[in-house]
Length: 373
Image (cartoon, rainbow, N blue to C red; front, top):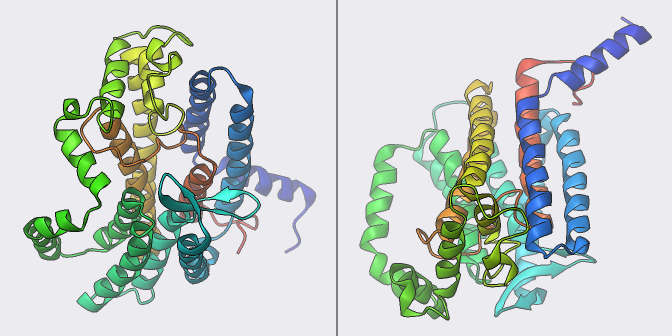
């Protein structure tokens, strides 16, 4: 039946209004916070702020485009995206840009961090492999998923970037978990890791060992490895309940805080907006997490459900690690705060993930001519 112009307009408006706008508005609200915090963190210099706005604008458009693509098309991209990410990581080890003794970036006209792509490509492929046959999964299925996870993990750890490697491993593990990975395997793995901790400690590089030891006693190296943690705790505590006021953070603007626009950006928010500011940002993160878990719960198939769960739980993990790292609970491992820290590649990858979440939710609730197959 040929659609009239009126019917086409109706379907188009229904398409626009059918997305999860609570999730979308929460993401936009996070970016608005990002604009104010980055302006302060960069000492009111506009250059980086313009770049941040461009990256978010591009990634937001990309998110909405992906949200309009059917999940079957997204599923078909799993293998090529995984292969591309593995090739890029391998190239990093050969021709990557070396910064502070580590190769983590490629210069392809613009500087990109391929390991960020693995945070998306790994769970996407594992979810695809586990959903090829929608039946009861066997140990062979889980073993194959583990192999697909461990390959990029080892390549990223070789850079060395153990923090990002653990996040990539976690993203893949969440897929296995939501697919029904037996608890006896999980518990046995934890016991094995604990039992092999002396070997793992021996394999760690000296700076990684130093980070762990400094976490236990930051004052042992207050001007070295412990400096980040000590200054972060001071900045968070000095903000009090209401903060010192926007652009009036002394720890931030007197440059006591290292990496204040990336890994330690939460200290800017805490010092200038206080406990109230932290609660506000955590509320936004919690709202996003709840919408993601809701999408996972209502997902119609194993692929959509496990992928949605991985994207959501990975996002939560980034927040927990970054805040724990800044407040001295976890070692400093270079994990940015999602959508608040400065970083183009990370922002784009996160927004692509949310585009997939929106696509899963949209497909579950609506089927119309504007949801492209």
